[in-house]
Image (cartoon, rainbow, N blue to C red):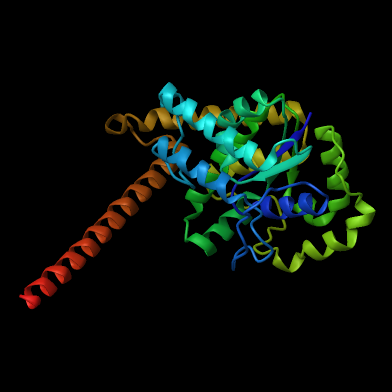
Length: 325
């Protein structure tokens, strides 16, 4: 039986670093990997075809990468679901047929596990889940620097990705690793992953140690948060509670905190479906509403810009046609 490690976690949480380490340890990441850029100078380690499939699934759901809203996959038609599973299965067969240990890394997997499990199980592949978790305020600072996201949007995204990844993999072979732990002691992290996932990496730690040490450049670890305090809003308080539970890695505490947080988000989401009746007394719902309004405003502004650009192009074309006459 072959094994696949699905590497997931919120954007800017060390998924690229973890995927790179796995590759050095002999895990096959397939062909056509997305290269490096200014924000990931060591490489993204993402299978381009799989990433495109994930973006397509999000479009089917009426969402996009980094969407702050719940995905609601139950609204997809059965025909669309069947097409998604077939597409993932074909991509697996193309690059990973009979590969004994391979991995796919993409933060969006955190929210798309239900689409991955059927095609994996149909091929008698054993799924292993590697969830990377980084301090939510470090992630927020990184996203502000890269994308200009507000603090509350970043914290809500952190909660969406982290809680959905935790819930979708509960009871399955998984390993939850903090970015801080990976950077501080990657050798112990590798041992924990092997124990948690019930596998052995093809290459030994002693053999690859110099290569991994060079790869995990601590100089690229920006926006470090030295303490666990600093929660400045309801979303921040919730994110920190989840982060601390995951850092301690006690199953019962993870279940309790994650279930409580997911329930609170569900309640807030339900309140926001009735905005005209919403009184705004719940601070969590109030903060989420402000994020939603910001996203809606951004959509309106972007749409207006696109319309203006199209109008300018049409005007230029009409002008050229008139001059030609």
